[in-house]
Length: 294
Image (cartoon, rainbow, N blue to C red; front, top):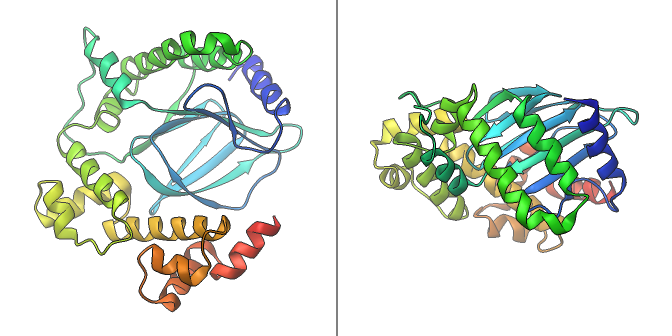
C-alpha cells in the first residue's frame, strides 16, 4: 500500500469522533482502526473485501485460519461466523483496514458486460480467500478515501468506483475465484440458499435433512459441500450464530443470560452457559461484565 493511502485512512480516523469501527458516508464502506494488538474477538462477517492498509490480522472460520497484512485483502463471499485477532498494531503504526461490502447484484451486472468473463472451475472452494490488493484495486481504495472529502460527490461517484472494484476483481488474478465464490454458481448457489435459510431460522430446531432439501442435495453431499464452503458443519454454524446473537442481546441490555438462552433456541440455560464459556472463554455474566467494563 502507498504511504499516501495509509496517511489518508489514518487522517480520516483521527478526524472522527467515537471509536472504531467508523461508518463512512459511503454506503457499505467502513474503516477499522486499532492502536494496539487485540485479543481474539468473535463476529459475524458479511460478504466483503477487508483491505488491510497497515498492520496485520488473522481470522478463523471453523477450523481454518487466514493471515493477511498490509497490501492484502480478505475476501468473504458468504455470511460466516468468525473469530479475528489484530496481531500487528501500535500507536505510531495503527492497524488500518477499509471494509467494502460486496453488492452481488452489481457484481453480476459487471460480469455480464465482460467480453471474456472469468470461468470458474467445477471445484467448490472455501467461501473465503486472501488476495493481494495492489495496482488498480489499491487506486480504487485511494479514490474512495479522497471522495470522503467531498460528500456532495458521493452519490454520483461512489457507485462508479464500486463498479470499477468489481471489474478489477473479476478480470484480475483471482477472477475465477471471485466468479465461483461471490457470484455463486451450481452447488455453491444451492449451499448458499441453505445457509440463508439457516441464518433466518437459527433459533429453531432445524434438521440437516431440511437444509439438504433446500440445497437440493443428498444428505451426505450437502454435509460435505457445506463444510467445504464454510469450514464448519451446519450444527457448528448454527451454534455460533446462536451464541453471537445471545451475546449481542445481553450486551445491549435486551435480555439477561437466561432469557437470551431461550430466545436463541436453547432449552437448557446450563447447556447454554457451558457452550458460551467454551466459545467466549468465560460464562455469560462474567463475559458481559468484562465487555461492559472495557
